[in-house]
Length: 72
Ligand SMILES: [Zn+2]
Image 1: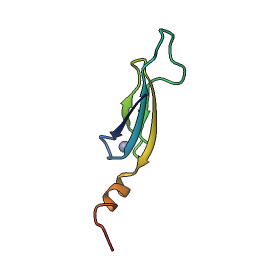
Image 2: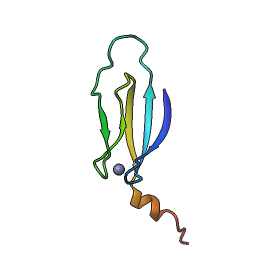
Image 3: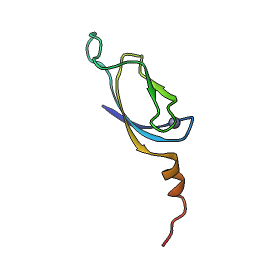
């Protein structure tokens, strides 16, 4: 399984993507199509290429920007 992070191009929300290639020719179970962003609702990734993918929401764009200044 391959793990990588994906950022929504529309709002900047951060997701973790777990991707596993299908080992046989049978169609993967689970829904296929476009993955909609939890924050902005727009499509930020598609999973129509036969690979099984799981997205986990990590951080909202507001939380990412709030992390920038480090307060004591
Ligand atoms: Zn988004």
